[in-house]
Image (cartoon, rainbow, N blue to C red; front, side, top):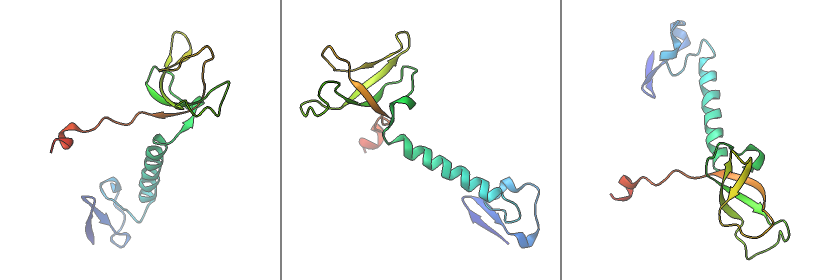
Length: 126
């Protein structure tokens, strides 16, 4: 019996094992379905963590512009200061460059997050 799923047929074990099970969404006679499922779960988990705050130690140090969360080294409870800034790693200087942070004491970066993708202007204009 062959059914359609994700544009690929489902191959049932009752029909016997086919050597080229990659062409099927699910092959009940081997573990390819489990492998595909685990790969998809890992893909979704990676996408989920991309949109969450991550420890600054895991931030890219290739010059990529990112959001950073920081604590003020003198007054970490300062309410007048926005704690989210744009930053990027300066490769030649081996230090973070944080946008719009003044003062003599550099901020203490604690977390980072990638910038979101830009809006799809074609869809926005519809």
